[in-house]
Amino acid sequence: MKRDKEDKFDRQLREKFDGFTPEVPPGLWGKIAEQLGEEKQQPLRGKKRRISTWWMAVAATLVVVCGLTYWFNRPVEVTYLHGGAALPEMEGPKPAPVSEPEKEISPAPEPLDAERVKRLFAKRTDKAGNRLAKITAANTDEGTAARGVAVTASAGSGSAKEEEILPVEQPAGRSARLEEAAVALEEPVLAGVPDIQPPVVLDDVEDTMLAVAPSEKPSFGVSSILNYVVGAVDQREEKLVTFSNDEEGSLKLDFNFSLARNKKKKIK
Amino acid sequence: MERTVTIDKLYEGCRAGSRQAQEELYRALAPKMMGVCMRYAKSTFEAEDMLQAGFIKVFTHVGSYRGEGSFEGWIHRIMVNTAIEAYRRNVRGGPHIAIDEVYDDVQHTFSMDRLECEDLIQVIRELPDGYRMVFNMYALEGYSHKEIAEALNISEGASKSQLSRARAWLKEKIKQLEGGAYETR
Image 1 (cartoon, rainbow over the protein chains, first blue to last red):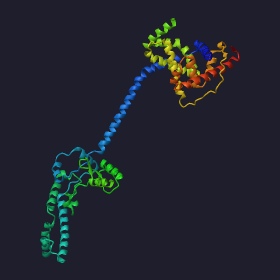
Image 2: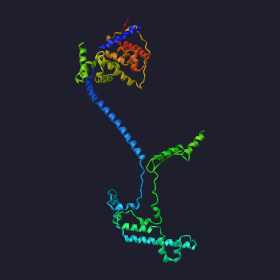
Image 3: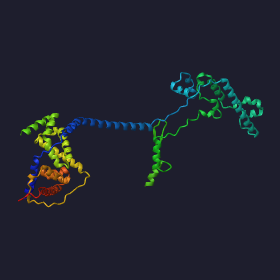
Image 4: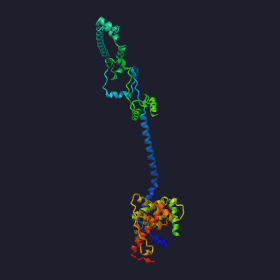
């Protein structure tokens, strides 16, 4: 009975609304038609944009990752000393990118006077000879005879013999090299290079100059980062793992197995 | 019969993408569908939005109509679904309003001839959103409590409870509108 009454109420309402046709706003169809026109174009445009954006993001990420990987694993620059071997090559035509900027920066090089250079060398040789003579004289006064035959001879024969002996006392090949440098400086091509100053630099260390290995700057790379991380984890003086870079830039791993064994023993 | 035939013919035109057929279908069914939307919406503006969104769906998804039932009935269901979607959007984070228990006097029969549809719609709109949806779907559309529960994401018990309260509340309101001019049987 109750259900029938409720159904009747619902039915009455349904019948009431069955013929209900309220007025529709006049401009509504225009909005619908306009939206329908946009809907026909938007789905394709929206999809395209989404896909292209996605690929662009992926491509950008790849480029960044590859760039960082190359940067941290790039080969270390090796500088080779050419010495005199490079001199003959400089006689030929100079490469444009190297010579042009120097012309702009440095003033025009003036040709070196070979006679003047020789005089300078002779002057310096005399000075060095005098210094050596003083040293040898002092040594002989103290009675030390173990300085060599040449020194003893110079001390005994006086200043007249010093001039003959002193060139012998100079490091082997010094005067010869100086003469070579002087001859080389006479050449017009070499005179154009402003950075060459061998007469001034060659004082006491000229023999060791070429033998000294090029100073290597400590490179900051992946190995440094990894060593820092290992150092943060492993706080002992000796590290279990050590990273380093060789000259070609390859990453090397060094394991300290003795530490690993000690650790195992400690754990047991 | 003639109207049904006309709408079926318009369906073919709409499926072919004819803008003229779409407009004719809109002119033929918009007032009736506007009545449906007004029952579900809280205001006339909301009803217009529902109607617009519903017809856009009709024209863009007309290919999915399989011919089961009338084309007009399919459009009616799309309008109801649009109203349900709007309710779901609005109900998120919104306050859940309940109506107090109202004494349901089932002994009275209502004479609704003296009431205008607009008055009845105004009364229905005063119902809280959930109650209005359940009452519309069950009493006026013929959905089962199970279907309503699934559509509104509530339990069947809640659907029954809300229907009962909404019905009692509406009767009380309609009684007041009629000014006591109802028949006692």
